[in-house]
Figure (cartoon, rainbow, N blue to C red):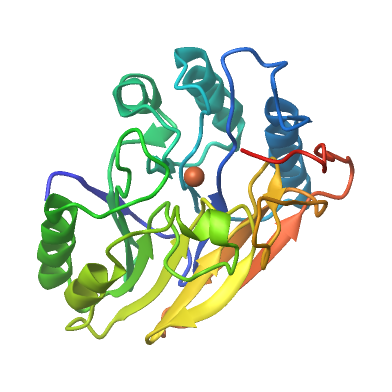
Amino acid sequence: MKNTFVYQAKRPIVKVLQITDPHLFKDEQTELLGVNTQASFGQVLKEIQQNDTDFDLIFATGDLVQDGSEEGYRRFVEMLKPFGKSVFWIPGNHDFQPKMVEYLNQPPVQSAKHILLGEHWQAMLLDSQVYGVPHGELSQYQLNLLKETLAKYPQRYTLIVLHHHLLPTNSAWLDQHNLRNPHELYEVLAPFEKVKAIVYGHIHQQVDSQWYRYQVMATPSTCIQFKADSQNFALDAVPPGWREIELHPDGSIRTTVKRIRQAEFLPNMQEEGY
Ligand SMILES: [Fe+2]
């Protein structure tokens, strides 16, 4: 598979950082519902650096840029350079893929969507974007690619990565923007026993749950947070953050969500839409 990246792990446990939904803009002063997304993303990256976590690579799970601007994608790459780690990405509903392809695929950012992680694991990054609309769907092309990859490496524990959510957040306004064909994903995954977990962004909130036999993880955005269990649009005052995922050689996963502590990025809580 030409789109495969081979990551030679230095230890038996592979540690992945997930950052999601930074929503950068062309102008670095622009705010999203009262939060300067450039500043909050910078603060998340700063606190990751300060935590001195010895991680292996970064997965950026979509909505990297809010306005599809070249400048946003360029800054995204520049801001990740200091880590010296490979960064892999998928598009979110807000992203503009022609610009992503043009500006993102330069070191440390990689274009590969299938990653062999050390000896025991692999990750498959899926494109669930339906251009121009907020909800997601996995195309037949994506489903076929996933099936072929799993069939080629069935012995590896597998982490599935996509932007849109599978499990309801119990927020009606947000759940209409979900992945529309999770049953088709399940049909592809079901025969492969070593598929372990699914991780996504999009919903700007933490989820640690289960879907069928898969561990499901969702992660706070690096900017604004959405409130769970809210019929109408509502923001949450919890801080931005990121997720750390340890993939162990026996197929088990240890994961933590971490949030920034040294700065505050409070949105305009009275905003009624997004
Ligand atoms: Fe999104």
